Image (cartoon, rainbow, N blue to C red; front, side, top):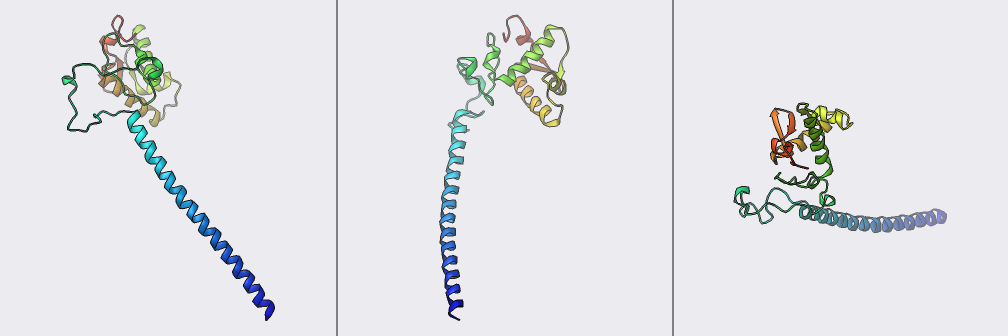
Length: 177
């Protein structure tokens, strides 16, 4: 009977030690989750600051219409300043393609080459083939999104739905060079 009590006491001490360790690990886990959430919030805030959206930071009430602006938006000082997911600047005479991020430059260059060779507009599926991408819906839709953004900013034209070419001003002498 004494031997059983001794084993029971040993098992009870072992269980208590494991519970203490489990409590310590649980506390560490809670602290790590809290820190993780703080990093997620910080990353989100930094992302908002570094990649300005379509709205003014001051809010929707303070947003002004593009036609009311007295001067054009600031452009990157160098080609290195253009980052992926950057805002596509409105095209204007003398604005170089280097103001665009690399993916947008590839699209404009491919369409410039086609325009130079006298070839017609490209579909996004054809663009995917030009860039060596698999013609899967995700890749094609990503290209379509970029082409639509370039069209909205005056870099491209869409003479027929889903078919893109350089805008006449960009294709003209010195345009987008």
